[in-house]
Length: 190
Image (cartoon, rainbow, N blue to C red; front, side):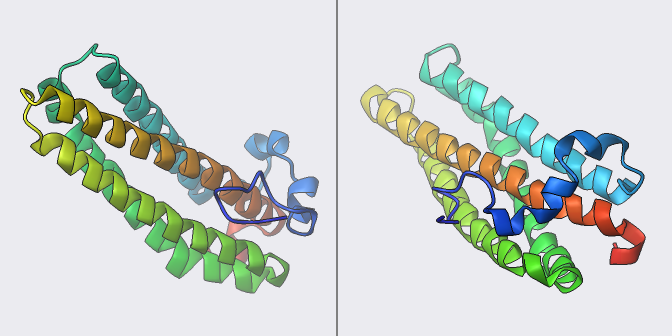
């Protein structure tokens, strides 16, 4: 089974042993689902919500329901905030949480390495999205043919990022939350 983010459809059996003990259905009411884990899951939910908002706004732009100017003024600061928060979130995971969790459960180290590689792929995609967004903002509205092509490039880049992010967030949760439920936040040192 390939574990690269573009082709992955969940974790292989050897990384699912805790998820099988603690499936998603038990998470909300589990005694070890602490405040930090709830906060982390809320951040993931916010990324998903904003991704959905960004995706829907991009469809509106592509289908002509919103003007170039209106979309540009709405999305530029929001996209910058989204990408900045995502970058900061990944740094905390890469440098604090993944090493901590890998030390706590060595059988999951391979999964944390995969998640770190996901971050690299996602960040490359974020860079591509930022470049497409910049090109979109710098294209004059009067240059309709160029604007349409740039709009399509931007929309495709957004779609790529949101697809990768959706896969990554689900897999990250499926690896980490069961570990936290099994051991407890305090015992893990989070």
